[in-house]
Image 1 (cartoon, protein in one colour):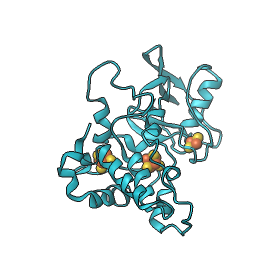
Image 2 (tube, protein in one colour; image 1 turned 45 degrees about the vertical axis):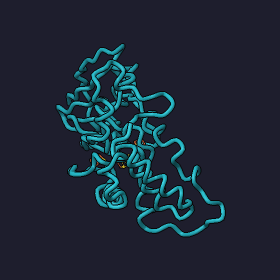
Image 3 (cartoon, protein in one colour; image 1 turned 60 degrees about the vertical axis):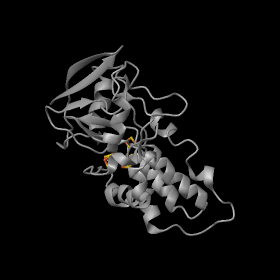
Image 4 (spheres, rainbow, N blue to C red; image 1 turned 90 degrees about the vertical axis):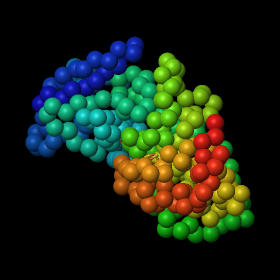
Amino acid sequence: MKIDIVTTRNGVRETVAYDYRPRQDGERPMILDVLLQAQATALPDLAFRYGCRARNCGVCTVDVNGRPRIACRARVRAGDRIEPMATLPVLADLVVRRDGIARQLQGRTTADHRDPDLNEEAPEAYHDLTACIECYACLDGCPMHARNFADDAADAALPDAATGYRWGNPFSLLKLQRLRLDPCVTEDGRQAALDAAIDLGLDACVGCKGCKCGVGIDLKGGVVGELLAAAGDRLSGDGASAD
Ligand code: SF4
Ligand code: SF4
Ligand code: FES
């Protein structure tokens, strides 16, 4: 069973036609099964990430035939092509640079805005958003995230080392909307979360067909729609695209 695996060494991409030895039970392998077998045999220095192997940690995402897939949970078939995620800079082989996304939320977490005297039950909508596994599959096709790469300069793909990417993405918006729903966060903190969403480029969501979550969270209704409604006419003002 031939599977193409795209490697990147010293910035040079190469496609390796890996001959996967099928499972004895005849089941189609998970992407991660193929990568582990390739590393144990023909490609001993193949670089890729995985952790939980149970769709919990989110670090194993790769692209298959151009679409993001969670490697420990998605199956492949003969002729498929496994590549690093196209939405983030490649470090080596299937490993991409993830830090610029998380850094974007520095100073914008519950810990930064928590009122120690508040201790209330969170609403259902908050719990729905805790299902995010930080796989970053939702970056695929996001016009807001694409703004980070609009510049053709050689370093355009690299986020600021201290603050992360300038422009946001569905994951960032999810985290900010969760902050707004958190009953232990101050009113100022909720307001700051909305301000941050606008600053990160929420205006890109106006008219966008919406984003898709790798684990089925309702990003369109439960995140983007809520933030757009809260922002109201602020998106037509200066705050919509502040640099
Ligand atoms: S709705 Fe907003 S966050 Fe979602 S893909 Fe479009 S621009 Fe990105
Ligand atoms: S919102 Fe969904 S697709 Fe995006 S990082 Fe979280 S789990 Fe992954
Ligand atoms: S290894 Fe943790 S989600 Fe795939």
